[in-house]
Length: 576
Image (cartoon, rainbow, N blue to C red; front, side, top):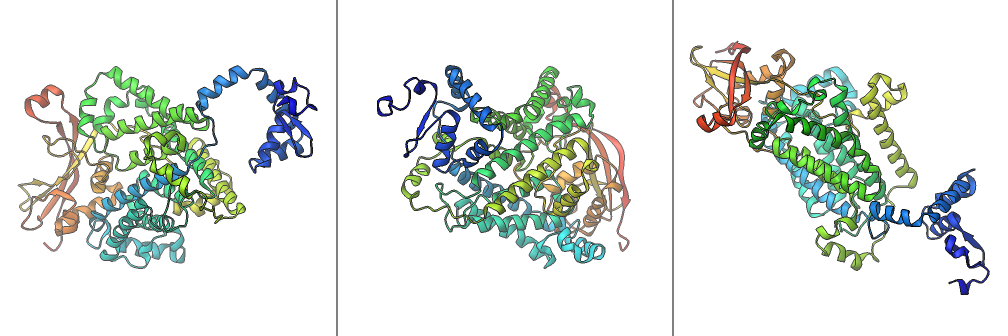
């Protein structure tokens, strides 16, 4: 090219890139790069900074000369961090695939809840939603609609309650097949928020609010079209990709930080996993065998957990190949958790979020090629409609980043460290769970207690109610139930951690058994009183531990237990 531009000294071509404008003006170095980008509509803010921010130009030119003088090293570094092919990242297929998978998660959540909703909060359920809403109305008046946002304000009848997860499951299918994705995402988010509010303690789990936060961001990923295509992109695709990465970082890092911040000696002494597999809410059969492994293995696993949750998350903010390492670590970690514990759709949702650590180029080999051929056929017809103004988009991103900073502050300093304006914003938005605090297994429960509920007609002969999934029968293997969540079984695990006075729903549960509520009894695996409810009920508490391999091989028992005493006294209905 030097022969075509004699006005440029030959040696300059070896020092830096040269930009020659149609008017014949020549720019070199960093300024040439910034002007080139700006001329094609890319990163104009960098050229503006170069021209108007004092010191920016000097630093940019120094850095350019430094890289130019060490091209060999930086070439190898680029290959290491970005790969052989350097091209602008695209997230169109990532966006398309994630929304399909998010629809699957919604479908699982709605179907799982739909099979239990009436027994949990129906008119004859454990905590009737109608009673709850009446109490809220009496205490909060007109503020109730903002503080407790739920469609159940229209009706809390059993038919209406059942219709919420049923409709949610139908709309989830629309998301999965890519039909009217944007309105469907909005409606399922409203439906799930409504269920979380009326679900009370039975929908108070971290994965419920995690799904709401993930679902809220997804509202800005889907195009408002009848049919979604992998080649479509939305105005907010790239900002949402980074907000999802920030969410993934905060979720995983917080889960590691709380383990140390809680002061739990089992985590700090690397002994947490020596007991976790048998004391977690619903272990799997694999958890039984992992529990039998040597102590050194469990201690090594704790160290690996801290590395994955406290160190690896920072790779999220590095170039693409570093993000691939983070994604592989997180996915492998979540798979191991999924195999050893029944944590509903929690692990699947986390794995799906890891998609945002990749780009279209990275997943091309794993996806059907037709997803990429579509782009060639329709990309000229696709117009990117700016449904949100630049100001509105910036405000949304700024709000989410602000809330992320707030919740990181709460993690390390507590709510009291927040400035009054921050507290006000958090308080106003808290009912909608747009951004939340997370921290999985901050402390490890040890030992494991289980509540066994018994009924009797004469006060002497007692028969036990058997739950579907929680430990009871010593010879029954731990179940594999995820991604379904048996919410009553889960709450029984929490109730065993304290006294029944701390869990008012528990007494309601016993009363429903005395009344023979069919919706509540459906939540159980076995009703020892099929002819009619018992006259009396009581609850005993046992300490459960895994048997060793020799005992299991000899007796077939997965568990052994020891009676600790009475959890709830004998009660009877007044009219019986």
